[in-house]
Image 1 (cartoon, one colour):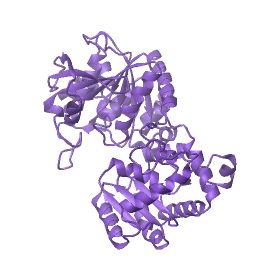
Image 2: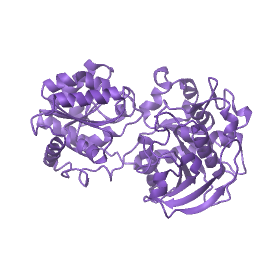
Image 3: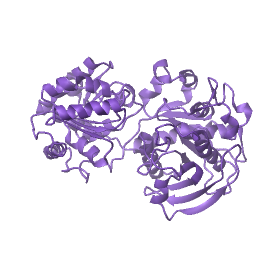
Image 4: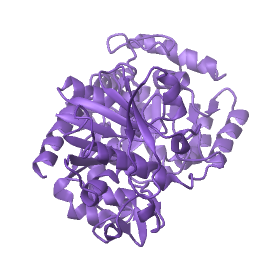
Length: 485
């Protein structure tokens, strides 16, 4: 099967969240499973720099509306798949965040920028003069690529591939003014209730959910949650209508990059049979953040966007009681200024107990996963989440809220789950400070019991979070999508 991934991000070159990680890791797993995979991604400056020897492939013809001229070049990715780099300087030669300007506002031409990405994907699946590209299936990721199935419906060509749309976060939908329908090369009859219209606006994600043969999202629990009002962002009715074509497939993680036995970014490597070596990483993390090097202080780690969605307010609301009780914090992240300032103030008030790094640092992220005793991830919603899987793999049991992929990966520590050997962390349900604090207190009590803690660590570290299982599930979805054409 020939699969064309369509994505606006791919790690490590362009990444704002889990989408970039998935776009980098899943194609390689599909190649290992026997697929031929190419990844279509805008040629941002970071990718142009990373692949100076990329080869020109083809000029993209005029595709309608205000969509500009473009070219496609090709480069080889390390994991055995090809990168098709969509070159259009007027759209993509912008530094920093791929969606936002320096004022942190959406680029005003995002509809055209990502309309072009989707339209080129559909063109490659139809009138392409390159038989070696013409895919059997388009796998379109998030709103930035979700218009491709609509182009296949409303601008059909000589060949038609099946399409799958993956929702990484339903909160981001790609909403634009209705006059943009013509600007991105769609006919007026596409702007209907069962087409690209959503409450009077043009909606990229809704277009894909209407037009794709199959829909996936990044965990089984999130697939159920988004069919309800609280998580559906207005699309829950459509998702319930298409529930028979909707699958929740839990993301994997890069088990080479995130492996405590071989990780070059941490102070000391260790494994499930050498857990005593993990203590060296705790000391190194305490030293790096200027904390007191105390083995008897529970060190709570957090690597996260500093937003309410991630539960940052829950952690900050109970941070002082935990600090007063002797806990330490190692925090890395960026987001809302009020949360960042609060963490910095706590670091000033409790310099021996609280270290907060604002921004992102890959080495420190690895060191927190390895050096913390307990990992905090109390998200209000979390389509999949990766950090809880990293922490499990690193023997750092997480405290999570029961939602999305967190519910699918973390098994709450109870006498029953401990006896069954399934317990690997701590789970709470209500998005409240008191529920969060109770879960952390349970975690600290278990941490003080060496035998219980090692059972939790071993259960997490021996779970298979690789991409091989998700890849097989995607292959099954692809086959059903092709059969539905």
